[in-house]
Amino acid sequence: MDIPAPNAEHHASKYHVFMQIAMFLAIVTGIEIVIIFVPVSDFAQYATLAVLSLVKFLAVIFYFMHLRWDRVFCTVLFFIGLILGTGTLLALVALFKTDRTELNLEAETAALAPQAALVETTG
Image (cartoon, rainbow, N blue to C red; front, side, top):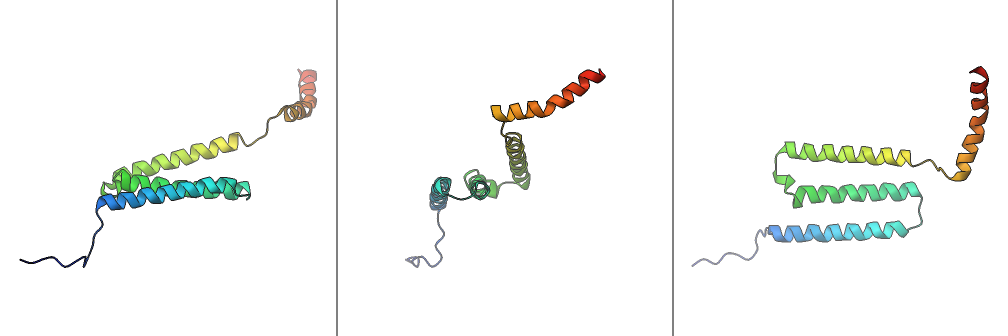
């Protein structure tokens, strides 16, 4: 009766791989929480958080959603969704980037007053 040699080539079971990825995701989430409180520029903070979110997204879709072993077409669909989501985020950031407080609205109204008077006189 042959007894197999102990761990000459040990392959981790899928359970262990999934647990390692879950721990990795928990650590990345912890890093994201810490980054929020680090006093750095807004751009550096947002860029770092975006990269870490992308890493988490890729880990989840490739391992937990089994995309790693699926067809390339499914991978392309997920990346199209990622690109659309990123474009939507950038559009919203650009849209709400302008500060529209009451003081700014008053300044904009005052700046537009000469144009309004010009329209009334020509109209």
